[in-house]
Image 1 (cartoon, rainbow, N blue to C red):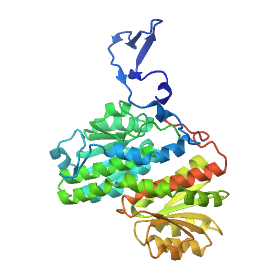
Image 2 (cartoon, helix red, strand yellow):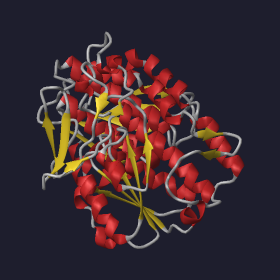
Image 3 (cartoon, rainbow, N blue to C red):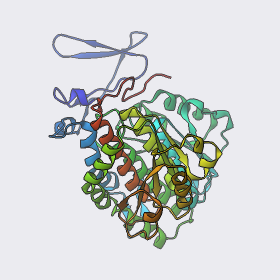
Image 4 (cartoon, helix red, strand yellow):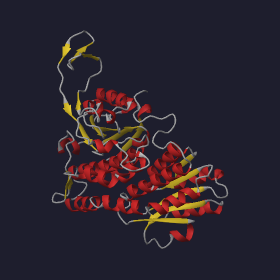
Length: 412
């Protein structure tokens, strides 16, 4: 869609099995496979042309990393009700239907899958609902039971494996939701309700602002479910929302510290491999950090839950191996830092400012603003995005178009 912005903002969305006829007088006709003419509607795309330009940045990815404070504001706009202590979302479900839910099943691919994994930690605590998360290509719809809410997460709204999984789930009589960035995309026709992340165009192949937008949407969804199920009190919801509304400013603080991250990235740009470790809410972010380093810097990278290091990965730790420790969710990660330091690794720790102990165990500490542990996942995300970006930039790689990858994956 971004490629069309210089020419038109009028869009007609075709359905599967439709054929368009283009006439010389600029008229169009849409027919189905039987030749029957179909009616259609023209939509206006509100994205600004400036959003599809680099705007002085060397790469779209860096521009989109810096757009995250504004993107988060857009995701939150009109959806935070501090008076009610609730998130204002149209889920296509009544409070009674939400109360009757027994499980949430999240399906997604790639970066969106990592967002879903954070939902697995978040939703049970906020709403008292168990959560399954599956890679869409491995989704087993026959395991679905009534009173399950199926949530598909897809940046483009067109990811083939996610679409197929949602179609399969329709036969099970379950509620279905989607989180996506693209209004009117195919996924919206397959679900009862959609939470749009409203991040604007994302040109770089590696997802950045759309990922943090997905996390923000999951925060709002968890609060809405929790309030509807009386698992959260109005006061609890209010406090969570007030702190959530501070996130854009906190992300800007991380961006303001980018030079420190750039220097560290350039120091380790010649590394043969990277490890990312985290616990609790930060385990999915460790996976995302490793994916970003693989995607754009082409450095073999692994993300692990901190407690899993002793079950095999420690065998790969050698002298000067860079290990990124996400350390804003409790002190337990410090024992894992000590484990890898004892094997000679260099540890780059993202930690909450003022942490009195982390500097005693890590090689390098990057301080992040204080917030709730779950919201610190967003701050750590921005940190690992910058680390991967500056590593790839130092190596002179094609950051916006990494080899063998595409922005929208429409094949199984």
